[in-house]
Image (cartoon, rainbow, N blue to C red):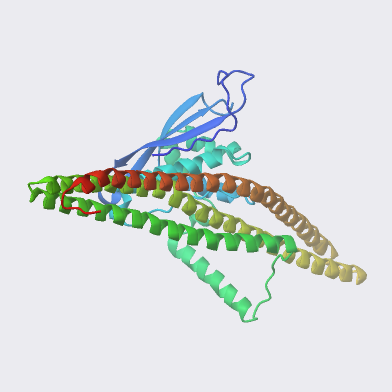
Length: 403
């Protein structure tokens, strides 16, 4: 398995030395299946090395399961509006895939990337929820996981109703029944266009990468079957031709293994990298939805506050006895409007910083993924060419072959 470790900054000094640079390094390793049947799950060792003062020591090892990672993601989603919370890999609902060695390896790698992106983020790495996740024992983690926030309290049926309500709202807007309240600055429109276009292109690239993995595996299996058949054919011959056939079959089987190995490398280092960024874009869209909600709330409060101010002016002119009550309501609305404005402006500011971080990280990660892809394909092609080339002299020396 490829384990990705990211640190806030490297240091060769003693971890607790006062002059040591702050660092936080995490690794997710050693997946183990626990339980049986529908109660079965995979546990992981999460190893943390740090010199940050809020942590218990230079190294801590805890056992976590997938639902613990979900808890951490949900807490961060709820508390850090405007920040692109790293995505989690999907939970497989298919029993035969859930506990396959390859699925477990992919899941472990994706969880490692997830937690390290949080640990290396200047805001998220300060989270108390991250500290709990990395430090507390399993019993404490279990208790923390039972406390859910916001939308994550809702049952699946409640969530489905929310999605239906959103679809209904969209339909009303399309049919002209409701005027949408949307932010439409040129900069934000450009960002939205970029994100939706990026999602489409990443999804298509990941789809084609999946086809490449499948093709390598199918070709590897075909070479393996061909190798076995040719070796059996060679066993029927007692002369030099039989020996050459046997060598051809053996070489085919060796190349089959190389193809299967490269298919696995493609899956782990290329297709999974693309899939990870498809998920990352979906996380960005969640933040965009939070921004849209904050903008709408700000607009609605601003309009309500303005109407309340007009009503207050009228009551004051009329010297109504309701002026006092109206003044209280107006002040409360004005304060709420100011708070909504600050919340929206904070999301905008954070998103501007986040998109720069995202693009820098994407450039680095995609550059590495495509480099490994090209390097692996070049090595595979070279190995296959050398293997077939080594057989040519033996085939040409066979008396039955005319060149």
